Amino acid sequence: MSMRRWLAKYRPQADVQVIFNVRSPDDVIFADEWRQYPVTLVAENHATEGFVAGRLTTELLQRVPDLASRTIMTCGPAPYMDFVEQGVKALGVTRFFKEKFFTPVAETATSGLKFTKLQPAQEFYAPIGTTLLEALESNKVPVAAACRAGVCGCCKTKVVSATIR
Image (cartoon, rainbow, N blue to C red; front, side, top):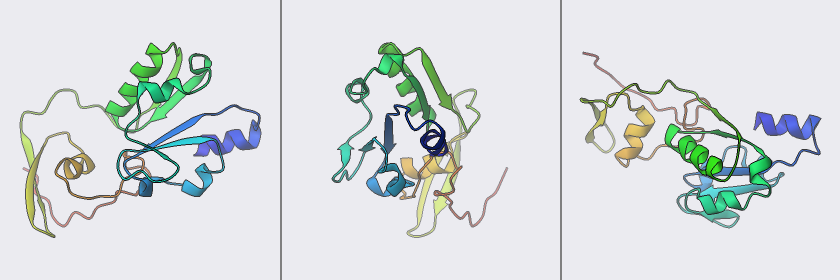
């Protein structure tokens, strides 16, 4: 949002196309502000009026006018950013940037971490290197998340105890 605000203030003539992807409409941060600009809202689950249902697709990227001549910027989970990068480069984009808020895991984990959720009681495992957010979501534990990188604070979750071995 900070880049969009800067462009609106200092380069109001800039032709900006935003595709904002969320799990559900409730996950849109700055929702009222985004709606003041041209934006395509995509909701993976529970899409309501004003949202494209599903996930980002190559077909949706192709709807962006003059895509190949644009500068493309993305942020989000690594698999999402990789998909965007592959998709836009296949469509002729040469100026592509992605924002990373994490250090990639060097190799696949061979052991797991044990989690116990208290209410209702549930025990589950996740590979070492998995974020708490990814572990919770992959085990169907509801948790709010917006930026998906821990930067905005939406996904803050209380850890009651932990044992490190």
